[in-house]
Image 1 (spheres, helix red, strand yellow):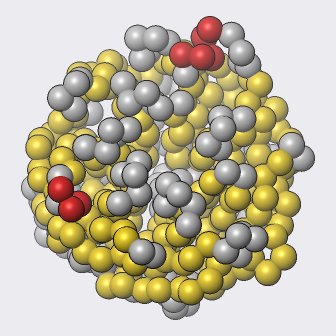
Image 2 (cartoon, rainbow, N blue to C red):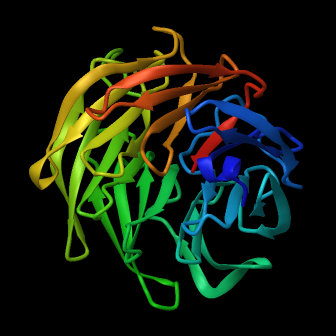
Length: 343
C-alpha cells in the first residue's frame, strides 16, 4: 500500500438507483481528494436521506468495505486495493438492508423492510451466510436504525425507533444470536449510537423530537451482558440529533444535528456520565438542514460528515481538547449520499 493510502481514506455511498461508492484519499493534513466512483452492482433507495447509521462499513482489519443496497436487498463487498476498490461480491440479505456491523470476520446486517437481522462470515470471496443466523426484532413496527457489535464482539445492539427500545443479543461462538433482551430507551426515537473503545459505555442519539431545540443523547452502561441507563436524555439545544461517533480515547462523542447543521461535542465521564461540552463544536451553515453521517479517522485526528441537502462533504481537524477546526468542504456527491466510513 502506498504512502497516500496509508494516510487514510473516506468512503460514502451514492444511494442512487445505480448505487456506487465514492472514495477519497485523505492526506496527512486531513484534506480529501477524490479517487473515483465504484459501482456496487446494486440499487440504493434514491431518497435524499437514508434512515440509518452504518450503511457503509470498513472491516476491522481494513481489507474490506461493505455497502448496503437498500432497494436491491443485498450487500456489496469490496476489497480495498491500494488506490482503488475491487467489487468481489453481492449477497442477498433480506428486505431493505440499511445498517451493517463487522467484528473479526463476523457480519450482521440489519434489514428494515421486514425488521430483522441476518449473519454472515466475511472472506476473500465476500459474504457466506451462517446457517440459522436469522433473527427477528421485538415487533413488526420496530423501525430499526442501526446495528452494532460491542467492541469485544460479545453483544449485538439494535436501536428501534418504532418501539422506543434498545434491543441486544448475546453472540454465540458460531455467530448466531441468543437471548434477545429489550430495554426502554431513555428518550424517544433512539437512532444512531457508538461505543467507547473499552465497551463499557454506549451513547445513543434520540432523534426527531417534536420540540425544536430539544435534541438529546443518552448513555448506557454495559456490564455482564446487561445494558442499563447511565445519563438520561441530555439535551444540546439543537434539533434532530441522529448520528454519533466516539473518539479513540473514549472521552468524547460527536453527534450531528440533521435539522440545523451543527456538530455537538459531549464528554464521557465516570460510570458513563455525559456532559455537554459544546453544542456547536462544528457548524456547516447554522440553521441549514442536511448534516448526516459522520466518522472519525482511525487515529482520531479528523472528523468527516456529509451534508446531503447541500451535496457536500465536510471535514474538521480534532484538537487535543476535542475542539474542531474546519478544514473545508468538498463537492461531487449527490443529494442522496449516505453512509460514511473513514480510516
